[in-house]
Length: 441
Image (tube, rainbow, N blue to C red):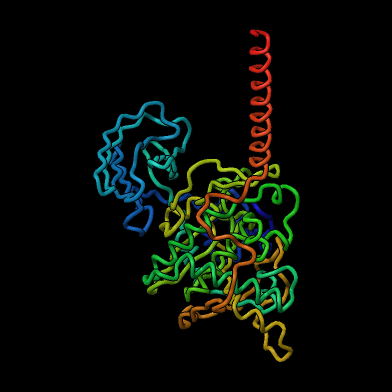
């Protein structure tokens, strides 16, 4: 969880009529929904398609006591499917050469009233999906899938000062230009040769998940503009969710893709599924509009790279579970409150005194950005132009050579220490050999 902001929900006084009728409150309305007695229980759903990427998805069907799982993970085939909380699971798993697979599972009753279906891929990536239990298994549908999509219909424009603030913490025209040149150069490196917009989006999402580390140290201490601005993310390759979101959307903008930044609640150590629809804003992710279809993207939740105790580390294989995830699957752990449109490559407008600012407040981005703006922008706008770095541009901040992670200086120290030890050992051996030869004489 990167930051917490309490929602401003107007109080609603209890009237006598509430004793005689049972009202149904829609989450999308600004009505007090704090009482546990009036929280709408999720509908039961017996089929889940996990995403729209036909090369990376599952279709899960619950049929009485059995669960049928089929789909395709083309470049990372399935190796195991099981349940998290069931004691015994019998299954038949068949995986084909093209990555398609099918499996029928017959699990025992879970411990408690919820469970998770866990799909393990060859890379070690683990994809898990929430399943509730009440005499039988079912997927919960609390309406957040539709609610999340409705937020994307009311995209909020932001100001040039905000755009510049997400780009750099220096807030100078020179720093903004240099960083955006870097973004354009990197975006072209990642996706410049790809013609299909969907594949461009996928390539950029994968690069961000595979190269940026989640900064747990910053999260535990304090998150400032310095930790989330694109300039510093490219330098250090670490940030929190806001930095992931900003970098991903800026790279996409450079390639002419329409992407918005989404603020909302996600499940965490302090927010479980039952509290998701009324929780605090604690996360930021993205959505892209391609061929009139919204595509959810959360690079943070697809990455297992962490920066903790001043060390870069991998906690496991990355996945693409949250790239083009289906609305129902996303609703198990994400609740959107607000979508912002930022034009990073127009950030120089801030330095033009004649600029006409957009509708939202002109605050530079921080971890405490509020979500109460009401001005909406039409998503039918034309596709943004593609941006390229100058022909003679040389990368300054981000390295884009093929490597798995940032330089590990601790490893270099160990290499030096071991090298010195080897040299000392050789010297001692040479001395011993000479001593032995001398004594033989």
